[in-house]
Image 1 (cartoon, rainbow, N blue to C red):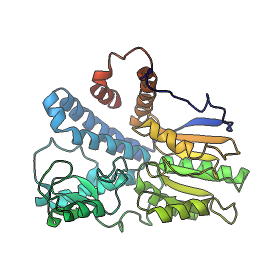
Image 2: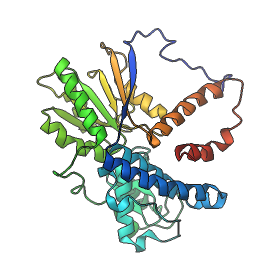
Image 3: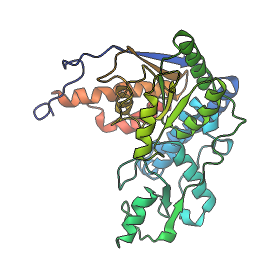
Length: 359
């Protein structure tokens, strides 16, 4: 890589930008949150250790492992992201046609909707109007419908024969946010920091990033009660609406909003958020590069204020271990462009799982 690539970081360029300060804000889970998390993690450890002890079991149950990790991450942020009926370790995989199990299909869609760690394989953007095929692959409705209409009756991912009757839409969002929502420890800490910031400077603007769209919806009610003006930017918005949201966010306070609730993936590239000077990251991401891109929507040419980044990390949880994993991943580009190779790169997947589950 060193012989064919040239990498220029912000530090090496002649671009003069205000400083960017990153702060780790450690959150202690409440008693209820801790009990629920510890119970889930204890069960998850046993099952993940059994999965990764055998290559064939790990390959078959890889999606179950990812589901376990996502649920633990959701519980660190807010128990409302992981309903009680999903706070159980999924059993080992048994091959079954999802088409014949509508209840299983609906649960799968609810889990997938909560996170935005996936793209439509056809357009390579976060899917809108999500549909799932009978072979359990996720697409935008318009993308897969056009594919079928062109006469290509095979799934682009696995070549399974498809027709319109093999496509299932995601459930409605009517049950996602309720008035009985109780703030989690992370949300409570966020509201305290936002209120303190407003007391110091009422015109300061902030961006709240999360990978879970459901969290952005849940945050709307407590923000309204606290008297904040806010907007939301996520993968469900089309290009025109996104541009309008960014334009409205640029209107100075008190006329304009001071908070933008933003999906990490939908806001990681191609937009300018220099109207804000504070960034809150509600949870660590699998991909540290995506976090960097999201931060750089605020810390870029046109920014005149010092940028403050606050990363919420739940103590003694998978959050802390994921933070350590991010540091390892950040070193990979440096190693790739150098002259040495890491001996443990071949085992990174298995080792990562052991580190994340503290095995």
